[in-house]
Each structure stands twice: as C-alpha cells, then as structure tokens.
Length: 330
Ligand code: NAD
Image (cartoon, rainbow, N blue to C red; front, top):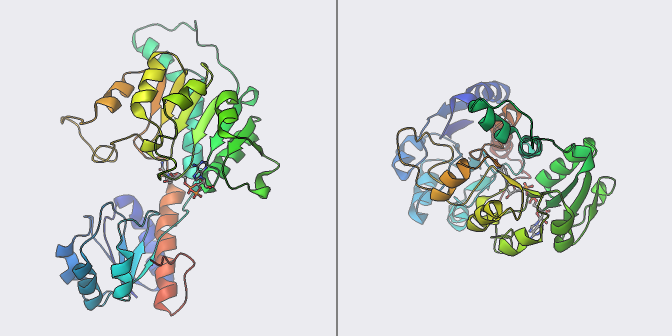
C-alpha cells in the first residue's frame, strides 16, 4: 500500500514510521495542506491521507484524484465536512474518518480549566506578577463539594463525567440520549434544572442548528452567580458577547474556553508581531477569571498516535478488500 499524507506535523513522524513498519506500507509525507495543485503527485498512491480544514476541491478534482490511482481518502481527523461525499462516491473513492481518537484528551483539558478557575490560579498569578503574594479572596471550593452539569454526554461528555465523578463531584447531565452505562455516575435532568443547579456547566455537544448559542444570555442568566462555564467543544455553542457581558456583570463567576467564535486563522497559528483579528478574544485574554487555550484540548501524545494509527489501519483494511467501521457514505 502506498499512502500520500498531507499536513504532516513533526509530532506525527514517530507514529507514521511505526505504522508504516507494522503495515509494510510506503508513506510519503508533506507538511502543507492538500490542494488540487497536488493531484499530479498522487500518481501511484492508493491512499490520500488528510488532516485539514476547508473543502479540498471541486467535483472535477475528485475525478482527477481517482484517475491518479487513489481509491481511498483516509481522514485522520473527525470532521468530514471537507469532503464532497457525493463526488467521492461518484468516483468510487472510499472515505473514512477517525470518530474518536481520545475522548480523555478533551476530558482532561476540561478538568484542567475547571481546576485553574476553582483555585483562582489566573487571579493569583496576576497578583504575584505585581508583587502581591497575599491570599485574600482566593479561598477555593474542593471539587467533591461541587455539582458538575454536562450538556451533551457522548464520547467526550462521558469521559468528563467519569473524571469529575472520580474526584467526588455530583454529576448532572442533559442529553436527549440517556446512556444506561452512565447510570452509576450521573443523573439526567432538564436543561433549566442543570443551569440553575450546577456549580460548573460544561458543554460537549456537536455544533449544529440546535446547539448554536445554546449558552446565550438567557442561559447565563439562569446560572448561579458563583458558577463556572466551560466550552471545550465548539466556539459558537457559547454566545461570546453574552458571555463577556455575564462575566463583567458578575452574572456568573468565570469561564474556561478551548474554543471561541471566529477562532479560525488564529487558534493553531503563530501570530507573534501580527494583529489578532478577534476583539472578543483579546478582551477575554485580559480577564483574570477566564482560562483560555487555543483549541488544543485534543492535542496529546496518545491522541496524535491514535489519529495516525486509526487512519492508516483503516487504509490497510480497505486496501486488502475489507470493510472499515469508519467508512462514511454520503
Ligand atoms: P458525540 O457525538 O460523541 O456526543 C455528543 C453528544 O451531544 C451526544 O450524546 C448527543 O446526543 C448530544 N447532543 C446533541 N445535541 C444536543 C443538545 N441540543 N442538547 C444536549 N445534548 C445534545 O461527540 P463528541 O465526540 O463527544 O464531541 C463533543 C464535542 O467536542 C463536539 O463539538 C466536537 O466537535 C468537540 N471536540 C473538541 C475537541 C477539542 O480539541 N477541543 C476535540 C474533539 C472534539
């Protein structure tokens, strides 16, 4: 099997070499994102392996990819909106994704933001930077005294539930799907009860029409004034303007965000010395009761290894005439 892999980062090298050896595959790598200009270099490759954002080309480009000999587009990411599934199917190109590479990676970042905020670490560090080493106002709760409300308890929400449960928190959850395997860990409640009761509200739904601005001014107004909101899912699930207002008005106490609205072109890039074109992000960066990370919750060694390994093992399965459980049909 011959694979052409795009958007390859140095941290993926070890996993690529390991899987190439295991599978007896030849894997050619380049660091840039795939564009239609790359199609000629696909000649002789069975698999096109991608990890990028944005549509990869027109319907005609899919025909050219297939004509180069590619039979399978293996995404080593979860989102497959970059693929025109109809055009892929029309050209007999199989498509797979990696639906879950490590729910724990995002779960642990969620827990990290919660801990930073519960222990007032940002405020304390800001004081220390000014020479103030006092403790006044920094008394904290302990996690086992808190109720954690999880909106969206799928793969990642389940990992979050188990992490907080292990620390002794009371877990309540809101999700149209009730999972019996979580009955020892959490209690399902309606969304209003969750917002009114939880000390920490954390969202782990997909971003769609039902979840865009799921946390808006109304939802924030229902929360306790001492509550923390966490978003390690997708930025637009939380209305950023409403959040900034709620933090300034002390409607809620704090926020931990791995993702915010209009982060594309910022999170994941080095903008040192350049303008950061997102005034709301810059405002949040000045607030001591906000803990931010640049959409890197997924970014752990096990997750990176799984993204590479699952994509390449699916490629090998399909190359050998098998069926992958991760195959996506339009
Ligand atoms: P999943 O599909 O396994 O689970 C999502 C859950 O949300 C499901 O149980 C679903 O029933 C529930 N849900 C859907 N709409 C809902 C609504 N309106 N109210 C309540 N519950 C609702 O998804 P996942 O893999 O756990 O991913 C969760 C989120 O994490 C997604 O937004 C994903 O894009 C994001 N994510 C973030 C990172 C990161 O690095 N920050 C990495 C991977 C995934």
